[in-house]
Every structure is written in C-alpha cells, then in structure tokens.
Length: 139
Figure 1 (cartoon, rainbow, N blue to C red):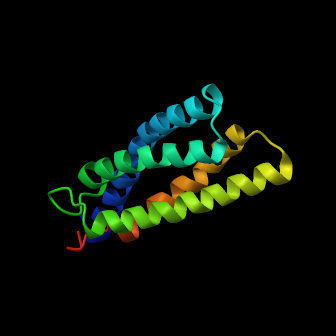
Figure 2 (cartoon, helix red, strand yellow):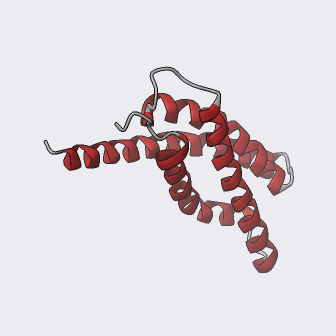
C-alpha cells in the first residue's frame, strides 16, 4: 500500500468516525436545544449556546480518543484550548448566521438551525483534522 493510499484510507476512516461522533453529538445537542427552546421556551440563542457547550465536551473526548487519536492519552491542555477556540469560532459564526437569517426572514429558528448543520459539520471537521487535533508525529 502506497503512502498516498494509506493517507486516503486514514482520511476516509477519520471522516466516517467524525460523522458517527457528529451524529451522536447531533442527537445529544438536538435534545438539549429542542427541550430548552420548544419545551421550556428558553430563547433560541441561549438554547443554542447551552447545547453547544454540552456537545463541546462530548465531541472533544470522542474525537480525541476515537477519531483522530493525536496522542495516546486524552489531553486537556493546548489541544483542548485549540479545539475550544475552533468551536468558539464555529458557534459564533453559527449564532450570527442563525440570528441574521431568523431576523431577516422570520423563519422558525429551529428549522434554520437544522439547515445550518451541514456547513457547521464541514467547518468543524476541517478545524479538528487540520488544526486542533492534527497528529504532530506526521501519522
């Protein structure tokens, strides 16, 4: 197997696992967001921030230990700071887009947020793969 083929196979495996973690994270954050916004009538932006914070811890642990495995043991120092920074940019862009779309169109924030998810997934995979959880050993 060539190095390029191995790298492509690894990329595909990471992307597949990232999507599985993302699916589980989606269910978790969806339940938090739905409960807060639809059942408890908490503001949609607050509901999004709380669901994001819950998902951040969940996805960091799984993406570190199962998807990218940049080191053998889970690290919460520099790597988590980078992961958190990327997540913070992601949530801020998400909040801005959600707010602007809802305010300018009057669409239901719940459905707007659902439509934004694919863009968020691509952004989050890219920042984790190529920056915050990038293997330093050149794997």
